[in-house]
Image (tube, rainbow, N blue to C red; front, side, top):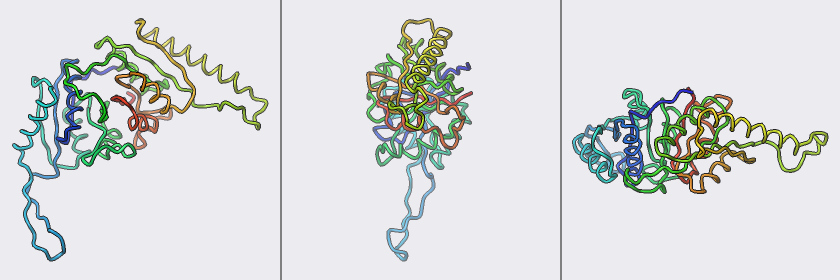
Length: 302
């Protein structure tokens, strides 16, 4: 499986206090891979704008946005507040539509990773994720690390990854995510739980299928999944700190439940078995990102 190192890390921030947390994580990842960090702030425009105060015939006043130099100074202050290392850091501000500009910058700079918060300027909304973040997740050319507002607000030296959860469905994206999880684990000496969720078969056997032995088939699926997990782990990781777990339930609920038991990072594919990642993005990944108690690294298949 192809694994790309995070040598070029792009971190778009809106200069809010919450966005500084994502900058701390971006600095930590860039340092971990001895890479370069680009901190980006997107503004609607740098040009003066005509704004009408109220009614149609009210006088028009001219509003002057922050200059490019002022925005760059704010970025410098955010970098200092985040405790991110200043070496190998580029500060960038561009005018345009937020999500499109972020994706354009990721393409132009050949970014290996985009790091951003799951909140909007008006605050975090679990149902909407923040429209900018969701658009970037759908269209990013590289993996995206989303940092929730309740993630630890710590400087990069204190951003520790000790337990990684890697949900997998054996799709190309899932296997790619597994590769990233294992590489991160090796670099941080973290343990990895590889989770497979069986979403089919209720506890009670349907009457219409009375001839079908649901418990027996459920057991078959569980054993089969465990064998596949064990084979994958044995091939890619001889380390005892990696374990495979099979559970039955709704995928996103089980992933969030397991993550709530002290997991520091979720690494998962953003594309299911059907291959539909754009524009649907992947409903399981989307729901996990919305509800996760920790940062989520979403990986598209190669």
